[in-house]
Image 1 (cartoon, rainbow, N blue to C red):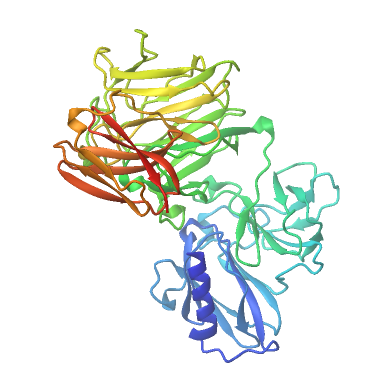
Image 2 (cartoon, one colour):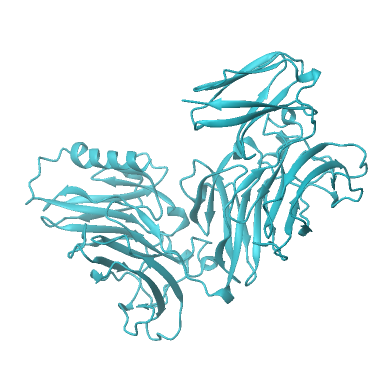
Length: 578
């Protein structure tokens, strides 16, 4: 998408405006940065001289430096993302660039200042474009890094910026709208300390600036978003962002004191086919792009004791304004948390939960997570019932009569259960009937000593009643974000009469694999690697039908195709060789 925008940008600048062939003397270059944090401007259209230049240009995005004719009048117009022509523009700004100059145009401010917090220094926060005429595409000294700093946070006061351990500010008394000259620094990793302009002893924020790989580069670091989102229409939170000359924008990691921090892991367990892949936004900024079903993040650090928001949007989203749902969170200091996205977007289009539980899409926040076992010789396991169409269940260890999970209904999350690091067979039964086996799974914990894991029930017991969504299974999530499918051992025999007429071919396979179901049963199929990790939910094969499945995204190796009719499971070894 970014490549397409840049190609289109070049076409507009070179062709659409009928610019004559430029010489070095009558040309100039310009980069555009979108830093207007108003939620109404989360995505905008940019017109150059009346022609659409950038469609759906996202907040905190930037163009590379591009060439314009120098010494003539141009206009940059900013319009809503729904615009159909330049006549829909919110604002139009004239520019006239000096020959050979390098310029940075920064869109900033809010469309209706009366609807937002006033600037503490009474600076005008109305939407505008700041044109900085002293840009650079590289450092003056190729052994250094040149950094320009922009104060672009409308509700932030005058600030100083210091390098931790150095008493003299590198940015002194910068108020909203100020843009510094380039500051030449060594290519090292720095901790930037933001303080009030008149008080370098009070720390507002700290950020890491990793410049070790930026030797020879020129960087624009811009303050972005709101210090107090709740007073600014819940717009994106304050942060520091670095823009490179090629248009890449990188968020500088915030440094949070241990006493004021918390950690969180996000697990995507929403089996709705519409949510097979989603975008996750944290405080208005894109955190996870195309986050897949049954995948997870490692534990990451957030500031504790303050309001955050997690927003879930379609994988095609361009900004947080496309979110399907937004969930507020406020984490306790030093806590470890697991956020589990679960449910379906339109419950009326899916099977009801047998116990009448709501299956609407939501995020469950468990505030008692662990990153390791409490006893280093054991394994700690937390169990989550996340299958929307599954009833209340018990979970037993085969050979033990007392359930380790008792009467768990959809949405229940157990405390951690401490077990020995051995291999178990987990038996799932109805909550009121431990003699009826619903499913059995192998839980190989022999190599998990000292670990903590979240085991979650996932998918649909009856895919055909749930838009043919992914079939039920048990999955284990580790603190580093690895998700492992627990092998289904419901039937131990290799083949049963009901699955005797199933063929998987060709083998070896290169471009596709076909499953021929000559039985009367509807089957579901999944592809696993030899470690038991789920690679792909292949889907449903109706009785007396066959289907082919593409192997385009499958690398060479040995896999298992597992086919089940809900009672019996067959495994077929498959070699992929391209």
